Image 1 (cartoon, rainbow, N blue to C red):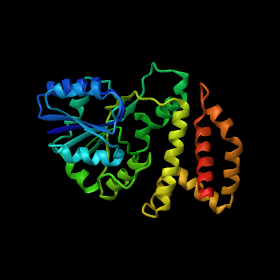
Image 2 (cartoon, one colour):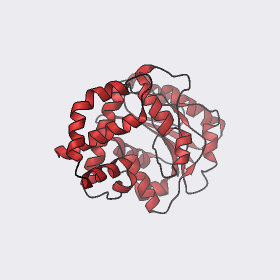
Image 3 (cartoon, rainbow, N blue to C red):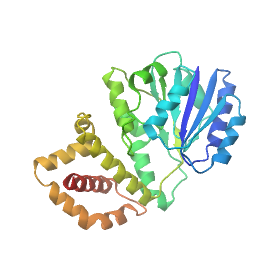
Length: 294
């Protein structure tokens, strides 16, 4: 009936699996939980405890094959028709998490459960990640943006997955979920969004988050420049803004501004109360630098 699939990289996933396992047992359903380590070097001993649980499979890949390839491999390994994907740095926050998804396991569907953030978490080291997550990724924001697709916590039929699959040519960090969601829409499917979030626990500190954002921004630009994803110009506000700058012939000016303002902006983004408008500007300046240099 249900395959719960968790790609993992250097994260202790025992508590998450045990919580999911207990809920699935209480529902008296056919299920499996498959954890796949994507070239991890940490927590391998701890996570091996998963093998002791009924209907749980723990697979260790020696080499990192990437965020897209590992999800495809998990789907190929799964035995049931409905696939529940989630990231490893998640925490169950409802005793009805599995039960709420079971409602949809009798139909061909794509269901997004959403992301939540711990309301008690106020560590300044994570201020930018927390504000971005709460304002741009959390459930209420997703509900206002019906075309958003995130891989953090979602259910779909294996028959649909096999029509789409993740693009394994994407090796960099970021935006594989945007491409996957676009393909689903192209096939005529709609997302069902429900109130069934997982808490995002594996927070990056501010500088790590900024550097990952730079990596994702560069990956977005490289994907667009391949010419294989022309729709990105319309679906990414960041790319749309860059194209406007190109039409105005001021990309070089924005690239120069990034050179002079980079450290100042980073300092402001690492404050206790960072501005997301400033964060958007930082991304546009950084994209301008990439575009100008390439």
